[in-house]
Structures are given as structure tokens and as C-alpha cells.
Length: 357
Image (tube, rainbow, N blue to C red):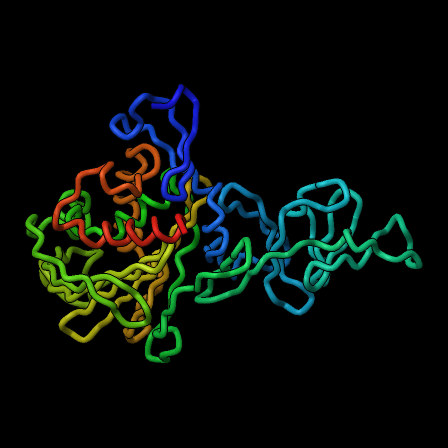
């Protein structure tokens, strides 16, 4: 037992205890932002289309970063503070690809190198400490991915990106008042469909979940395959490309550590609808969320009509998750799981191993 406000470390997690029995009371907080293993993974922090002629401020794992396009056009990221007097660079400007500090006008170019200190004139050398300590940042699938420390994880593979018969649709970035652990657990789960998604596709679904067999899926994803009967109202008709009150879906759901989930939907017409769901821990109980869709349709339906149904599904998840407090414990003994929870239990096991190593 710990004194009020004391902390301990279990399986690589930092726990703060404000209750004699924090697990039973649900008041255990897992401090992801203090776990060094997560700093070596990749996270979505912005859409590439949003990084144009101005710097973008983002927050990841409790730290602030600035993202901009350097003179070469590549996305560049660094801690959001000028090395001079620690002004936030995200409120500065970008001039011909150089990030300019709003406080004293210092300018930073490719690789975060300081290329101008106005007060020093042109003849004085730039101090080595004036250069920004950039972090790894790349663009993929229309998204900006950031890794705060030396990358050890990988960005999830979506090989469909290279198939010209599919179009990609990006959805924007949202902020959810919930933990990335709860989001990923939810996206790996199908037993909530007939309860949470009554307004979209869940009405016609059987509440009993058949035994799920976990397996290695394509492109390095790990998860399971299943089939469902889904309601096919107006929004569903646009997404499925089929008429009728109910539509049959052959699906798969898999995860990529730490917080990415892929869902594939195959309709009897041959239409494929693939989703990449990315949850990014802003801090322990706030996350940013985006989803990306790939479809092999005829490209005639406007993109916003296509993703409107997926947005409605996400909104139903958001309402539920924002009512569940705290971080989902990775300790399997802290919550009760049944056979339908096998996918999320396996994801929790692998995540616990990752951050406890």
C-alpha cells in the first residue's frame, strides 16, 4: 500500500496512487508521457496539407513541437522553443522555407540549422548551440508522422497506397478527451457494435460474438477476420455502394504497435473499403485522432460523402470513450475480459511488453 500521492513503477509503467486500492477504484494513472520506450515510436501529429506556409504547433507525449516545411520542401520538426530565449517557434513565420522566431528574428533552415541571427549581423559566426535539435519527421499517406527519439518502431504499412485502382481520402485531425489506450482497445473490439453504433450500422448485428482466431494479417498487421450483417441506411448505402436494408461485410481488424489499427471491409460487389485509424497520445488522457480511407470505387462519389458514414461511427465511439475516465490499465488483472476481448487483450499484452522492455 502506498501513501496518498506516492508513486511506484510496475512493468515499465509509472503509476500514481491517490487511493489505497487504485486498481479497484479505477484511479490508477499510467504515465505514458514519462515512459521512454514510447519516445522511439511513430505518431501522427498533422496532415501534410496543413503544413504549408506557416509553422504548425503540435503536442505529443506531453511535449510541444513545431512542424514546418524547410527550404527543400521536406517536413521538419523540432521542440517548440527557440534556443535563444525559448520563445515558441510555432507562433513565428516561415519565409522561403526558413522558420523565423517571432521574438528576436532568428531563422532556421534545412535540418534546423540556424542561418541568421539579425542582431549579430552577417559577419559573426553562428554559435553551434543555436541550431535546433530536430526530431524525426516524415510524410506518409497524407499524414505527418513524428518520432521524438531515435526510431525503433516503424510506421504501419498500407501497401494499398501504391495501387492506382484505389483512392485515398484523408479526414482531418480531431482531439478526443480520452486515452490512446482506450481508443485502440475500442477499435480492436467488435462486441460494442450493437450497443454503441445504433445510429449507424449496429442495429442488425448479433450481440453474440463468435470465437475469434488471432493471426498475422497482410502488411505486418496482427488481428482477426470476421463477418457481420450491418444496417445499410442512407449513409451506409453511400459507403457500401449497395441498396437494401442490410449488407453483408467480410472484415478484418488488426493492430500495429503502439496505437494504430487497420480495418478492412469487403462487400459482395467487390468493393473494398480500408481504414487506417491512428490514435496519438497528446498526454495521458487526451489524444488526437485521424482516419484514412482507401477505396477501389469509380471515384465518382464526392469524398466527403464517402467518409461521412465513417465520421458518424467515430462520433459514436467518441461519445462513449470520453465518458470512461483515465487510462485503460495494461495489467490484465485490473479489468475483466471475456473471449470476445481476445484481440484487445493481445494488443494490451504486446504494448505492455513494449513499454516495459
